[in-house]
Amino acid sequence: NAEQLRLITYNVENYSGQTDRVPALRIIMRDIHPDLVCMQEIRSTEAVSTLLSQVFLQINDDWAAVPYHNGDDTDNAFFYRSSKLQIVSTRYIETTLRDIAEYMVRPTAGDTSLRVRVYSLHLKANSGVGDHIERRRQEALVLRGELDQLPAGASFMVCGDYNLLYSSEPAYELLLASTPTPNGQLNDPIDSPGHWEGNSAFAELHTIGSEDLNARFDFILVSNAMMDRIGSYVLPETYIAYGNDGLHFNRPVNELPNYAVSDSVAHALVTASDHIPVVTDFILASENSDVSDSPPAPRTIGLLGCYPNPFNSRTEIRFSLSHDVNVNLRIFNSLGQLVTTLTDNTHAAGVHTIAWNAADIPSGVYFYRMTAEGFTNVGKIMLIR
Image 1 (cartoon, one colour):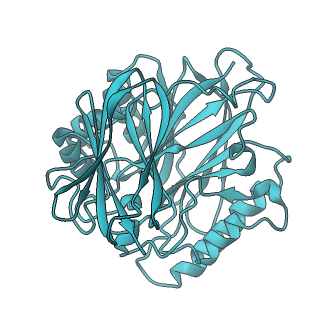
Image 2 (spheres, rainbow, N blue to C red):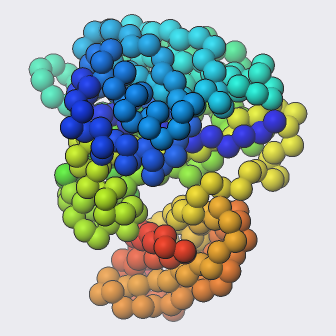
Protein backbone atom coordinates (compact mmCIF):
# COMPACT_ATOMS: atom_id res chain seq x y z
CA ASN A 1 0.00 0.00 0.00
CA ALA A 2 3.04 2.31 0.10
CA GLU A 3 4.17 4.17 -3.00
CA GLN A 4 7.02 6.58 -3.62
CA LEU A 5 5.89 9.60 -5.65
CA ARG A 6 7.76 12.58 -7.06
CA LEU A 7 6.49 16.14 -6.64
CA ILE A 8 7.67 19.22 -8.54
CA THR A 9 6.99 22.90 -7.95
CA TYR A 10 7.92 25.13 -10.87
CA ASN A 11 7.36 28.82 -11.65
CA VAL A 12 7.17 28.79 -15.46
CA GLU A 13 7.46 32.58 -15.91
CA ASN A 14 4.29 34.10 -17.31
CA TYR A 15 3.33 31.08 -19.36
CA SER A 16 0.36 31.63 -21.66
CA GLY A 17 0.83 28.64 -23.97
CA GLN A 18 3.89 29.64 -25.99
CA THR A 19 4.93 26.65 -28.10
CA ASP A 20 8.54 27.82 -28.42
CA ARG A 21 9.14 26.72 -24.81
CA VAL A 22 7.46 23.33 -25.22
CA PRO A 23 10.58 21.38 -26.31
CA ALA A 24 12.55 22.67 -23.31
CA LEU A 25 9.77 21.87 -20.86
CA ARG A 26 9.42 18.41 -22.34
CA ILE A 27 13.16 17.75 -21.91
CA ILE A 28 12.95 18.83 -18.27
CA MET A 29 9.88 16.78 -17.38
CA ARG A 30 11.16 13.72 -19.19
CA ASP A 31 14.38 13.92 -17.17
CA ILE A 32 12.74 14.42 -13.77
CA HIS A 33 10.03 11.74 -14.13
CA PRO A 34 7.46 13.45 -11.86
CA ASP A 35 4.11 12.11 -10.71
CA LEU A 36 2.51 15.42 -9.74
CA VAL A 37 3.47 18.95 -10.72
CA CYS A 38 2.48 22.34 -9.31
CA MET A 39 3.14 25.31 -11.58
CA GLN A 40 2.93 29.05 -10.97
CA GLU A 41 2.59 32.06 -13.31
CA ILE A 42 0.05 30.31 -15.53
CA ARG A 43 -1.96 32.83 -17.56
CA SER A 44 -4.68 31.02 -19.48
CA THR A 45 -6.70 27.92 -20.27
CA GLU A 46 -4.54 27.60 -23.37
CA ALA A 47 -1.44 27.39 -21.17
CA VAL A 48 -2.81 24.40 -19.25
CA SER A 49 -4.00 22.75 -22.45
CA THR A 50 -0.65 23.22 -24.20
CA LEU A 51 1.32 21.89 -21.25
CA LEU A 52 -0.90 18.85 -20.92
CA SER A 53 -1.09 17.92 -24.61
CA GLN A 54 2.36 18.93 -25.82
CA VAL A 55 4.52 18.27 -22.76
CA PHE A 56 3.07 15.75 -20.31
CA LEU A 57 1.05 13.53 -22.63
CA GLN A 58 4.06 13.26 -24.91
CA ILE A 59 5.88 11.52 -22.04
CA ASN A 60 3.13 9.29 -20.56
CA ASP A 61 -0.47 8.82 -21.64
CA ASP A 62 -1.87 8.89 -18.10
CA TRP A 63 -1.29 12.58 -17.37
CA ALA A 64 -4.27 14.75 -16.43
CA ALA A 65 -4.74 18.37 -15.35
CA VAL A 66 -7.03 20.32 -13.07
CA PRO A 67 -9.06 22.80 -15.18
CA TYR A 68 -7.65 26.32 -15.31
CA HIS A 69 -8.83 28.68 -12.56
CA ASN A 70 -8.76 32.36 -13.50
CA GLY A 71 -8.00 34.29 -10.34
CA ASP A 72 -6.37 37.67 -9.81
CA ASP A 73 -3.00 38.19 -11.50
CA THR A 74 -1.24 34.96 -12.59
CA ASP A 75 -2.50 31.55 -11.53
CA ASN A 76 -1.56 28.03 -10.49
CA ALA A 77 -1.80 24.77 -12.43
CA PHE A 78 -1.74 21.16 -11.27
CA PHE A 79 -0.82 18.11 -13.36
CA TYR A 80 -0.86 14.52 -12.13
CA ARG A 81 -0.54 10.94 -13.32
CA SER A 82 -4.05 9.51 -13.16
CA SER A 83 -2.76 5.94 -12.98
CA LYS A 84 -1.34 6.82 -9.56
CA LEU A 85 -3.48 9.66 -8.20
CA GLN A 86 -7.02 11.01 -8.41
CA ILE A 87 -8.33 14.45 -7.52
CA VAL A 88 -10.74 14.43 -4.58
CA SER A 89 -11.39 18.18 -4.46
CA THR A 90 -10.01 21.54 -5.54
CA ARG A 91 -10.53 24.91 -3.91
CA TYR A 92 -8.98 28.37 -4.04
CA ILE A 93 -8.07 30.60 -1.12
CA GLU A 94 -8.29 34.33 -1.82
CA THR A 95 -5.53 36.64 -0.60
CA THR A 96 -4.81 40.32 -1.18
CA LEU A 97 -2.94 39.36 -4.36
CA ARG A 98 -2.97 35.87 -5.91
CA ASP A 99 -5.18 32.92 -5.02
CA ILE A 100 -3.64 29.94 -3.24
CA ALA A 101 -4.77 26.64 -4.74
CA GLU A 102 -5.58 23.54 -2.67
CA TYR A 103 -5.59 20.17 -4.43
CA MET A 104 -6.67 17.16 -2.38
CA VAL A 105 -5.52 13.86 -3.89
CA ARG A 106 -5.88 10.17 -3.14
CA PRO A 107 -4.26 7.01 -4.54
CA THR A 108 -5.88 5.56 -7.64
CA ALA A 109 -5.40 2.04 -6.27
CA GLY A 110 -4.65 0.52 -2.88
CA ASP A 111 -5.95 2.42 0.15
CA THR A 112 -8.18 4.96 -1.60
CA SER A 113 -9.21 6.44 1.75
CA LEU A 114 -5.80 8.16 1.98
CA ARG A 115 -5.80 11.93 1.55
CA VAL A 116 -2.95 14.36 0.94
CA ARG A 117 -3.43 18.08 0.32
CA VAL A 118 -1.06 19.87 -2.04
CA TYR A 119 -1.09 23.67 -2.04
CA SER A 120 0.37 25.92 -4.74
CA LEU A 121 1.11 29.58 -4.06
CA HIS A 122 2.94 32.62 -5.38
CA LEU A 123 3.59 35.23 -2.70
CA LYS A 124 4.27 38.93 -3.38
CA ALA A 125 7.36 39.54 -5.48
CA ASN A 126 10.18 41.92 -4.56
CA SER A 127 9.18 44.45 -7.21
CA GLY A 128 6.62 47.19 -7.69
CA VAL A 129 5.39 49.56 -5.00
CA GLY A 130 4.57 48.91 -1.37
CA ASP A 131 6.01 46.91 1.49
CA HIS A 132 6.71 43.54 -0.12
CA ILE A 133 7.70 41.84 3.12
CA GLU A 134 4.51 42.95 4.86
CA ARG A 135 2.36 41.85 1.94
CA ARG A 136 3.96 38.41 2.03
CA ARG A 137 3.21 38.26 5.75
CA GLN A 138 -0.44 39.10 5.09
CA GLU A 139 -0.72 36.35 2.47
CA ALA A 140 1.00 33.87 4.78
CA LEU A 141 -1.41 34.83 7.57
CA VAL A 142 -4.37 33.90 5.36
CA LEU A 143 -2.80 30.55 4.50
CA ARG A 144 -1.87 29.78 8.11
CA GLY A 145 -5.43 30.49 9.17
CA GLU A 146 -6.64 27.88 6.69
CA LEU A 147 -4.01 25.31 7.66
CA ASP A 148 -4.73 25.69 11.38
CA GLN A 149 -8.29 24.52 10.74
CA LEU A 150 -7.12 21.17 9.37
CA PRO A 151 -7.38 18.15 11.66
CA ALA A 152 -4.41 17.14 13.78
CA GLY A 153 -2.10 14.82 11.87
CA ALA A 154 -3.21 16.03 8.42
CA SER A 155 -0.77 15.39 5.58
CA PHE A 156 -0.15 18.41 3.38
CA MET A 157 2.58 20.10 1.34
CA VAL A 158 2.76 23.77 0.36
CA CYS A 159 4.61 24.36 -2.90
CA GLY A 160 5.47 27.46 -4.81
CA ASP A 161 7.31 30.70 -5.29
CA TYR A 162 7.50 32.28 -1.83
CA ASN A 163 9.78 35.15 -2.98
CA LEU A 164 11.48 35.03 0.44
CA LEU A 165 14.89 36.62 0.97
CA TYR A 166 15.75 35.12 4.36
CA SER A 167 14.30 32.81 7.00
CA SER A 168 13.68 35.63 9.50
CA GLU A 169 11.05 37.15 7.22
CA PRO A 170 7.74 37.38 9.13
CA ALA A 171 5.92 35.29 6.51
CA TYR A 172 8.35 32.39 6.88
CA GLU A 173 8.42 32.57 10.68
CA LEU A 174 4.62 32.63 10.79
CA LEU A 175 4.30 29.53 8.60
CA LEU A 176 6.89 27.55 10.57
CA ALA A 177 5.67 28.55 14.03
CA SER A 178 4.19 25.88 16.31
CA THR A 179 1.57 28.35 17.57
CA PRO A 180 -1.32 29.02 17.72
CA THR A 181 -1.73 25.33 16.88
CA PRO A 182 0.71 22.77 15.49
CA ASN A 183 -2.02 21.53 13.12
CA GLY A 184 -1.04 24.10 10.50
CA GLN A 185 2.69 24.24 11.19
CA LEU A 186 4.99 23.90 8.17
CA ASN A 187 8.53 22.53 8.04
CA ASP A 188 11.47 22.90 5.68
CA PRO A 189 12.37 19.27 4.87
CA ILE A 190 16.06 20.16 4.55
CA ASP A 191 16.06 22.53 7.56
CA SER A 192 18.21 25.24 5.97
CA PRO A 193 17.48 28.61 7.61
CA GLY A 194 19.54 31.70 6.85
CA HIS A 195 19.88 34.69 4.55
CA TRP A 196 19.46 32.94 1.21
CA GLU A 197 19.44 35.85 -1.23
CA GLY A 198 22.83 36.76 -2.68
CA ASN A 199 24.62 34.37 -0.31
CA SER A 200 27.01 31.82 -1.82
CA ALA A 201 26.77 29.70 1.34
CA PHE A 202 23.33 28.64 0.09
CA ALA A 203 24.32 28.34 -3.57
CA GLU A 204 23.03 24.78 -3.94
CA LEU A 205 19.54 25.86 -2.78
CA HIS A 206 19.05 28.81 -5.14
CA THR A 207 16.13 28.53 -7.56
CA ILE A 208 15.66 31.98 -9.11
CA GLY A 209 17.73 33.27 -11.99
CA SER A 210 18.30 30.35 -14.33
CA GLU A 211 20.66 32.78 -16.05
CA ASP A 212 22.02 34.14 -12.75
CA LEU A 213 21.30 31.85 -9.76
CA ASN A 214 21.28 33.96 -6.62
CA ALA A 215 18.25 33.36 -4.34
CA ARG A 216 16.04 30.66 -2.86
CA PHE A 217 12.51 31.73 -3.84
CA ASP A 218 10.92 28.33 -4.43
CA PHE A 219 10.09 25.85 -1.66
CA ILE A 220 8.19 22.71 -0.82
CA LEU A 221 7.23 22.99 2.85
CA VAL A 222 5.42 20.15 4.60
CA SER A 223 3.20 19.47 7.60
CA ASN A 224 4.35 17.87 10.84
CA ALA A 225 2.73 14.60 9.81
CA MET A 226 4.87 14.53 6.66
CA MET A 227 8.07 14.80 8.72
CA ASP A 228 7.75 11.55 10.68
CA ARG A 229 8.09 8.14 9.09
CA ILE A 230 4.58 6.94 9.89
CA GLY A 231 2.03 6.79 7.11
CA SER A 232 2.73 9.38 4.40
CA TYR A 233 6.01 11.28 4.72
CA VAL A 234 8.50 13.33 2.74
CA LEU A 235 11.97 12.02 1.87
CA PRO A 236 14.29 14.96 2.69
CA GLU A 237 17.26 13.22 1.08
CA THR A 238 15.55 13.59 -2.33
CA TYR A 239 14.85 17.34 -2.00
CA ILE A 240 16.79 19.31 -4.64
CA ALA A 241 16.82 22.50 -6.66
CA TYR A 242 16.84 20.65 -9.95
CA GLY A 243 19.75 21.60 -12.20
CA ASN A 244 21.65 23.43 -9.46
CA ASP A 245 24.98 21.73 -8.76
CA GLY A 246 26.00 24.32 -6.15
CA LEU A 247 28.70 25.67 -8.45
CA HIS A 248 26.67 28.24 -10.38
CA PHE A 249 26.24 31.08 -7.89
CA ASN A 250 25.59 34.26 -9.90
CA ARG A 251 26.08 32.23 -13.08
CA PRO A 252 23.67 30.72 -15.62
CA VAL A 253 22.90 27.04 -15.11
CA ASN A 254 23.89 26.34 -18.72
CA GLU A 255 27.40 27.68 -18.25
CA LEU A 256 29.07 24.34 -18.73
CA PRO A 257 29.97 22.07 -17.15
CA ASN A 258 26.90 21.58 -15.00
CA TYR A 259 27.46 18.51 -12.83
CA ALA A 260 23.81 18.15 -11.80
CA VAL A 261 22.23 17.65 -15.23
CA SER A 262 23.18 16.97 -18.84
CA ASP A 263 24.12 19.81 -21.19
CA SER A 264 20.77 19.57 -23.00
CA VAL A 265 18.82 19.80 -19.74
CA ALA A 266 20.92 22.76 -18.56
CA HIS A 267 20.11 24.64 -21.77
CA ALA A 268 16.44 23.65 -21.48
CA LEU A 269 16.24 25.12 -17.97
CA VAL A 270 17.39 28.53 -19.23
CA THR A 271 14.96 28.42 -22.16
CA ALA A 272 11.96 27.28 -20.13
CA SER A 273 11.86 29.81 -17.28
CA ASP A 274 13.77 32.22 -15.07
CA HIS A 275 13.22 29.75 -12.19
CA ILE A 276 14.37 26.17 -11.85
CA PRO A 277 12.13 23.44 -10.40
CA VAL A 278 12.23 22.16 -6.83
CA VAL A 279 11.79 18.40 -6.59
CA THR A 280 11.16 16.00 -3.73
CA ASP A 281 9.90 12.45 -3.34
CA PHE A 282 7.41 11.39 -0.70
CA ILE A 283 5.86 8.16 0.50
CA LEU A 284 2.10 7.85 0.19
CA ALA A 285 0.92 5.23 2.68
CA SER A 286 -1.58 4.57 5.44
CA GLU A 287 -0.40 4.72 9.05
CA ASN A 288 -0.65 0.95 9.46
CA SER A 289 1.63 0.33 6.47
CA ASP A 290 4.98 -1.09 7.54
CA VAL A 291 7.16 1.30 5.52
CA SER A 292 9.25 3.14 8.09
CA ASP A 293 12.05 0.58 8.24
CA SER A 294 12.07 -0.39 4.58
CA PRO A 295 11.03 2.45 2.25
CA PRO A 296 10.84 1.72 -1.48
CA ALA A 297 14.12 1.73 -3.38
CA PRO A 298 14.96 5.12 -4.93
CA ARG A 299 13.85 5.54 -8.52
CA THR A 300 17.02 7.24 -9.71
CA ILE A 301 20.72 7.58 -8.97
CA GLY A 302 21.31 10.78 -7.03
CA LEU A 303 23.76 12.67 -4.85
CA LEU A 304 21.78 13.79 -1.80
CA GLY A 305 24.21 16.16 -0.12
CA CYS A 306 26.21 16.04 3.07
CA TYR A 307 25.68 16.87 6.71
CA PRO A 308 26.95 18.76 8.56
CA ASN A 309 28.12 21.44 6.14
CA PRO A 310 30.18 23.41 7.12
CA PHE A 311 31.84 20.76 9.29
CA ASN A 312 34.72 20.20 11.65
CA SER A 313 36.71 16.97 11.17
CA ARG A 314 33.87 14.64 10.12
CA THR A 315 30.88 14.80 7.79
CA GLU A 316 28.62 12.30 6.02
CA ILE A 317 27.76 12.23 2.31
CA ARG A 318 24.51 10.60 1.19
CA PHE A 319 23.55 9.18 -2.18
CA SER A 320 20.73 7.09 -3.62
CA LEU A 321 20.84 4.19 -6.06
CA SER A 322 17.92 2.76 -8.01
CA HIS A 323 19.84 -0.48 -8.62
CA ASP A 324 23.15 -2.17 -7.79
CA VAL A 325 25.95 -0.17 -9.39
CA ASN A 326 29.61 0.80 -8.97
CA VAL A 327 29.96 4.16 -7.22
CA ASN A 328 33.05 6.36 -7.29
CA LEU A 329 33.00 9.10 -4.65
CA ARG A 330 36.03 11.38 -4.43
CA ILE A 331 37.05 14.57 -2.64
CA PHE A 332 38.88 17.40 -4.44
CA ASN A 333 40.34 20.66 -3.15
CA SER A 334 39.65 24.09 -4.67
CA LEU A 335 42.55 23.61 -7.11
CA GLY A 336 40.96 20.48 -8.53
CA GLN A 337 43.51 18.18 -6.90
CA LEU A 338 42.35 14.80 -5.62
CA VAL A 339 42.34 14.65 -1.81
CA THR A 340 40.91 11.18 -1.24
CA THR A 341 38.66 8.50 -2.70
CA LEU A 342 35.88 7.54 -0.29
CA THR A 343 34.57 4.61 -2.31
CA ASP A 344 35.05 2.93 -5.67
CA ASN A 345 32.93 -0.17 -5.19
CA THR A 346 29.57 -1.69 -6.06
CA HIS A 347 26.73 -0.65 -3.76
CA ALA A 348 23.23 -2.11 -3.54
CA ALA A 349 20.05 -0.22 -4.43
CA GLY A 350 18.95 2.12 -1.66
CA VAL A 351 20.15 5.21 0.20
CA HIS A 352 23.74 5.12 1.45
CA THR A 353 25.84 7.26 3.77
CA ILE A 354 29.63 7.45 3.63
CA ALA A 355 31.66 9.36 6.20
CA TRP A 356 34.65 11.56 5.42
CA ASN A 357 37.06 11.86 8.32
CA ALA A 358 39.07 15.01 7.56
CA ALA A 359 40.91 15.28 10.86
CA ASP A 360 44.26 15.79 9.13
CA ILE A 361 42.99 18.00 6.31
CA PRO A 362 43.42 21.82 6.39
CA SER A 363 40.44 24.17 6.50
CA GLY A 364 38.98 25.31 3.21
CA VAL A 365 36.46 24.68 0.47
CA TYR A 366 36.31 21.17 -0.97
CA PHE A 367 34.22 19.41 -3.59
CA TYR A 368 32.83 15.87 -3.48
CA ARG A 369 32.14 14.23 -6.83
CA MET A 370 30.08 11.12 -7.39
CA THR A 371 30.05 9.11 -10.62
CA ALA A 372 27.95 6.01 -11.24
CA GLU A 373 26.97 4.48 -14.58
CA GLY A 374 27.09 7.71 -16.56
CA PHE A 375 25.73 9.82 -13.70
CA THR A 376 27.99 12.59 -12.38
CA ASN A 377 27.26 15.21 -9.74
CA VAL A 378 29.33 17.52 -7.58
CA GLY A 379 28.69 19.16 -4.22
CA LYS A 380 30.56 21.86 -2.34
CA ILE A 381 31.55 21.50 1.29
CA MET A 382 33.42 23.71 3.74
CA LEU A 383 35.83 22.42 6.39
CA ILE A 384 36.23 24.83 9.32
CA ARG A 385 38.59 24.33 12.24
